Every structure is written in structure tokens, then in C-alpha cells.
Image 1: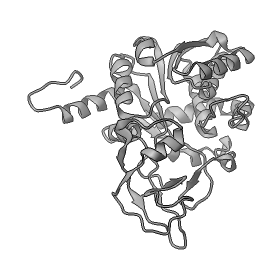
Image 2: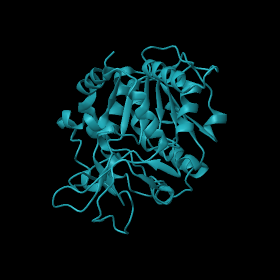
Image 3: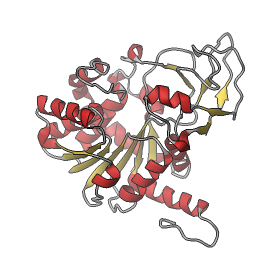
Image 4: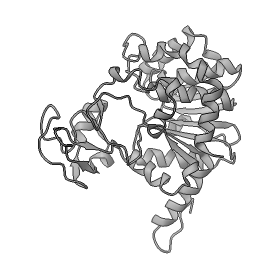
Length: 326
């Protein structure tokens, strides 16, 4: 299986249907519809919808629901398919209630099985059932490791796909709010960036996600690029979490056809108008300073994730000790 070919086949078959989904990006910042503002970009949402339509999964595992923004793309696809179920988990009861109301409004209750609580306690592996694993949650390496070990590693399906959000290829050049090293208030620093510098960004994480940063997130090495000629803004690779850093370590151990960063593919699908909602982007710009949507989705073959995780586990296992997945 070639991940890019899978995406191309899905978009070719079902991309013409995605126009009917535009009420989602148009309401992405509508607090009445999505109290916890959804940030899943238009291009990623269309690809997600098309993949669900094309693959016709019997079951999907999603962590976390939030207010149901990304869940809507999946459940609407399942409704068109006429079957399938999303097992989705959310810790915040208020967000879960908003999502439940949204699903009811669009007649999607029969395609969504909601669980409220910590997914580490409420989720159960079902290796023979899940065709898509969808992770958009805590954004820490430890949570990603838990998800892989509890849900991906026990799986046996060779056709299942795994999705991670808020991750970019290391080659991406972006800026987002204040850029490292966060030396001024408006992000327009004239100072030269230091490649390979370590930025302490716990405060930024709290501003971005409006929650306390995890201990493992307190320090993260971010490669910072100095401003381009005639520009003031520094850029970096956009990966602001230990989950994203670890995800890139995994893809480095995969074969090129086993994964795809949507950041690299948006220009290949002009028919989906991937830049249509760029002006709505909040705090996100490209290396030239132009507004851009997130396009921060990584799709992998679940079998490739299992193989890469075993390699990584063996690589970091203490000498003389065996790891569970080594």
C-alpha cells in the first residue's frame, strides 16, 4: 500500500462531495456551534472525509472528541456509507455535551459512540475492528506512546490507517504567534534566530492551549531560522510538542510510501481549494508571512507504525533489558 496513492484514490472518488461540508469551516470559530473552537483545517477535513468514504471502515477510534469538529467529517462520511461506528472519547463533559447536541442535530447519533472520561480508562483495544485510528488529543510523547502500545501494537489488520494531528514534517517553514525565542510581545523580533537553540516555551503552551503545560513539555529543542531578506519574523519547523517530535522520529524509520504529511500534499489537490480558508487562519502564517491553514495531519499505515515503534523501542532499550515491543 502506498499512502499517497490511497489518499489520491479517495479524493478522486469522493472529492466532489466535499462542497457540502463547507458549513464546518465556515463555523469553525462559531462559539455557539463549537464552544471549544475547532482548529482542524479544511484540506485535512476533506481528506479525512474522503478516506472514510473510500475505506468504508466498520469502526473508527477517535481520541479526543472535543466539540465534535473533526468527528463531524467522519460521521457524515459514515452516514453516506450507510454503516460504521466511531468510538470517540472526551474528558470534558461540557465539550462532550456540545458534540452530542451537534450529532443529534445532523442525525448522526447512530454513527457515534461517545465515552466521557480519560481514554486510558474508558477505551478498550479492538484490533480486529478498527480501520482508522484518529489521534488529536494531549500532544505529548507519553500519550502517543500509550496510544500506540494499547491500540496500534495489538492490531493485526494490515490495511488499518493511523492519523495524528498537530504535526508537521521537519522541512516545514512556518511561524505561529510569537516565534522562538519569544523575545517580544508581538512576534516581530529583529533578533537573529539560533538554529538548534532550546526555547523554554511552557508559557506559550499555556497561551496556545489555555491549560497548564505538561512537565515533559517544559523544554523542547526547536530549530529556529533567522528572518528572510527584508523580513522581521523568524520561522521554525512548527512542531511545538513532544508528540510531534516523537512522530517525526517514527516517520524517519518508515519507508516513504508508508506515510504522508498533508502539509506536503495540499498543492496537489487544487480542486479541493485547500487555501480557501487561509484568511480565517488564526495566528498561523507561512515563511513569507502569509496566512495559512494548519495542514498539520499525518497519515500512516498502522502496520508501518508498529514496525517503526519496534525499531525505536529496540534502539532505546537499556542494554541487557528487553522492552515489551522490542
